[in-house]
Image (cartoon, rainbow over all chains, first blue to last red; front, side, top):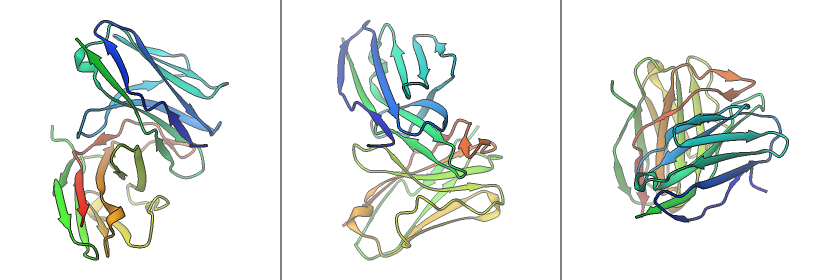
Length: 111
Length: 120
C-alpha cells in the first residue's frame, strides 16, 4: 500500500459544479497535512493547510479525518481556472524528515 | 520579493555524464529541499537541508546522487554517471525555518520552477 494515495482522476466537471477529492495516508503518526496545486509543467504551490478542525478558504474546504486516516478537499462553484492537479501532502513523525507527496488528482473544469 | 530560482531550466545530457543542478532559495529561508518528479508521478523526496545541521539524505536513490549547500544558501544537486531513469523534473523548495514537530515539517514549502533533465 502506498503511503499516500489519491485517485488520479481525471475529474471532468462543468463550471459551477462541486467536486471533492480524498487522500488516504497509511501512517497514523502523520503530523501535518497540506493541499498543493500544480498546473501543467509548473511547480507545486500551496493551496491550503489542513487543520484538525477543518478549514475553509473561499470556495475551498479542507477536512481531516484522523480516525479513518484521510484528508479531503472540496471545491464549490468550480471555475475554469481551477483546472489543475491537486497534490495531497503528508508530513510524518518518524524522528527524521519525511514529507510525502501524493501523485495528485487531475481536475478539468469545462465551460 | 524573489522566489526560489533554479538553473538550468532544461538540461539534456548523455548517459554516463555528470550533471549539476543549482537552486537559489528565497533569501533568509533556512530550510531547503530537493525533490524529483517523473512524468505523471508525485514528488519524490531526495534531500533536506536545515541551517547548519547535517542534511537528511534519506531520499537519495543511489550514491550517484549528492548535494551540498554552501553558506546556508545556494544548493547544488549533482548526479554522477547519469542514467536514463534519472530523467525527471528536479524541484527545489525552501521554507523559512524548516520548523518541525517530531520531524514533520509544519511550514509551507515554496517551490522553484524546476530543472527538466533528459538523459539520452
